[in-house]
Image 1 (cartoon, rainbow, N blue to C red):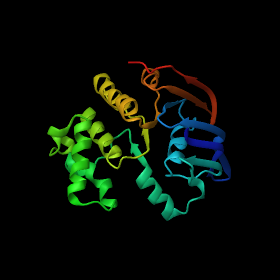
Image 2: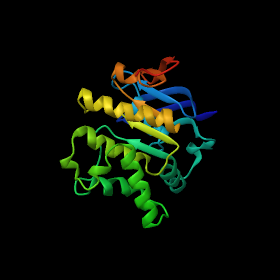
Image 3: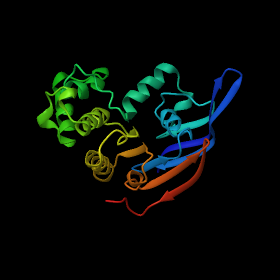
Length: 232
C-alpha cells in the first residue's frame, strides 16, 4: 500500500522576471513502511521535494496524497493540523531550543495536542529511551554532543507518533561515528516500528542504509534503485 503518491508535481520560483523550475513533473510512489533516500547534486530539488511532502511548501502544480489525504487541496489551517499529526521532521542542524532541556525540546510538539501532563511525560520518556538518551533528559543542548543533539531531534520528531518521518541531511553535520549511530537509529525505527522514512542525503554510504534510492537532477527523477535489504 502506498503511503505517498506524487503525481505531475511541479514547483517554480520567481527571481525577478526569471522563473526557476525547481521540480518538473515528478511522479513518485512510496510504500507504507518504506525507507527512501533522495540524492542528487545541490539544486536538484531534493529538499524542495521533502518540504512539499511535509506540507511546509505548496507545489505550483500536481498533487500529493499521503495515506489517501490529498494535502494539496487542504486549506492553511487544515494543512497545519494535518502536518502536526502526521509528519515528523528532522533537520540537519537539529533546531533545538538552546534554553530548553532535552526533555523540554522533545515535549514541545506535544503541547499542540490535547494530552494530559502525565501522557506527555510518558511519551517523552519513551522517545528519549528509544533514542538512548533517557539519562540525558535534563541536559541543555550545549551539554550534548552533536550526535546526541541529533538523537534528541529525532526523539522530538517521533514523539507525536507520526506516520511519516522526513529527514533533511540528518548526518550532514556529524562525524563518522555519530552519523553511524543516527543511521542505526533510523534503520531501527524503520525495521522494528515500520516507520515510513524519506531522507535527503549527499552521502552514498548513508543512502545505502535506505531500502530505495531516488536520484534527482535538475528537478526531475533520473534513476531509482531498490535494494532487497539495507546496508548494515
